[in-house]
Image 1 (tube, rainbow, N blue to C red):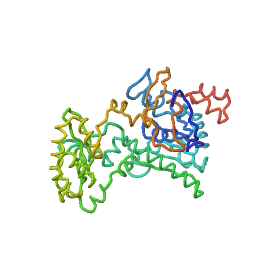
Image 2 (tube, rainbow, N blue to C red):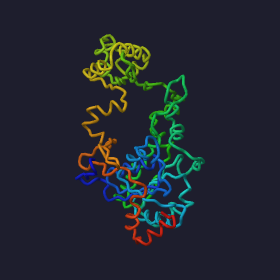
Image 3 (tube, rainbow, N blue to C red):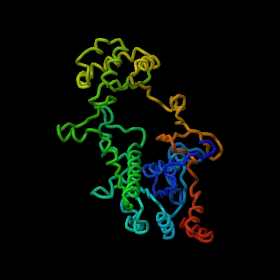
Image 4 (spheres, one colour):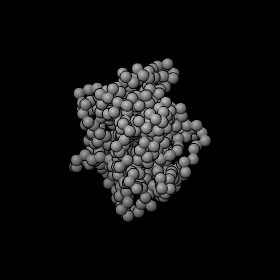
Length: 404
């Protein structure tokens, strides 16, 4: 995206109308994906400040840079859900929508008169994505639950870190983002059901803890069958050897994944360990994992004797999967990021260029794109109200009454 130029190809979600009743991360990230691929996403915000994400992390002239990414391609309208006319506006908006995404605590919308029964009666084809800490049912449903809680309850935090230290978190709100992805996928599956099977709308119920739990690989059957409890194992991938992060002579960190049988052999030959490359006991993963400590010790020793550039060069020549551990500095100068347009150039409101993440995934025929960055609070309120049939006089009255 440069200067608000539109892509030529029609986007795959063009024609879909999505209403977002969400704040911060899970709900807004879910709708961000839809907006990037052509859906008309109308974000409903409180008039008194809007989404708190507007003020999170690094601010540029009073607005979060994260906001400009998270709300790209969305329309912002304001509505006071505590005001009857504000609620009526939102209800009319949802009545014309294909998808509603919300991440209130369960029961909040029902108390506002905007529960599923009401909304479905207005719009039988509505797909309602509900993102919450614990889901819409169960004994925990009324408890508050952010992504950090979902990561903890879902099992991710327990296995992250080193055995001799308390659990740690990743440096991003991964639980919220995982839930958002499940929400977007669920919405599209529900739409597919309507189109192919002639079905009605339905609720897509995503619990943050379940979204994380679903990613936990073999944790459940291994505990159920063997009583095995996954523990923290640092940087290694438990049960899969070698896959680890190592420190080079110049103090850099390199991740090496040589756990394929042929790859391991090439790796050992590249570091002059033909004895291990040809050791029949190390020919498969189970044999290597049984000697994990020995293997990791020798890789640590080899990396410590070479600078990062030499390590990566030798491993690339041997076709061994490896990478430096990238910081933002590395990303901004990396030819792969640049070639695949993962650092888009957009303009801030004052005209300054800035980079934002490119669109994922890349569709060959109907790619997503950035049409505009996160808008000012309420920038599209009048436009959306007018499309719903409100007159200029009525819109003025809504503003004066505090409804929008």
